[in-house]
Image 1: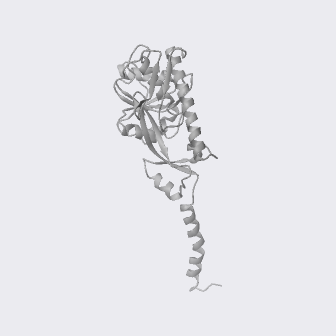
Image 2: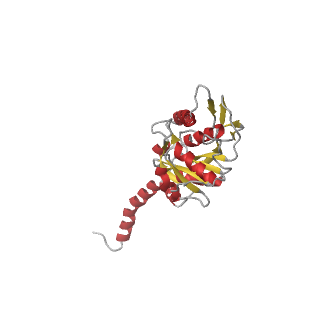
Image 3: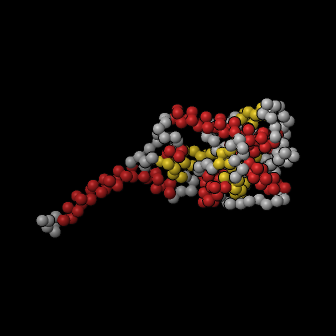
Length: 263
């Protein structure tokens, strides 16, 4: 039986394991990655002194604005993320915590992840080229499109690649400038049929877009709520579901005729 004098000491002793557990929880590695706004690149221009889009076999034209694909940056898959890191990110708008498996394929090392992301980018570029030529009713046997974008992996630039190819060839099919001189950014996967798919990290990508001068952001419609969560001032969201809807929205925005959807 404990006396009154020994009870505080007993309580302190019992508290030690609790403190140890809390400390372990704070500093133990967790299966998450920290992410932040990444680079953007104008697909109508150059990246590292190399044109992003090169077209042969069909006439092209100069474009007046920018179409900026967006990215997020994530901690290295080997980086240990602690509870303290997670709590810190909770109160920041320029950083987010994502499940590591959502950022990197599980069970792969850094080299395998890089190879996977490179293959995904190559597939995305192939689908973007096919979608653009299908939209313009051009034969891929006659028109050769080369896409080069260094240090970027994954499929989320597909929509912007497609719009860039269309804009360089002949805009909406009649020669109109898709950007209208604006800096337009966006994200979204695309398939050969022109369907736009969702991606991750949209709230961070809108911040990267606004940082680099964009005033319009094309977002997969299913991710409107995510995009609105931390939307920077001065950035207009346009939801898209297909390549056709994206082109129609940009054409209406440029001409001032027709409805432009919003999130």
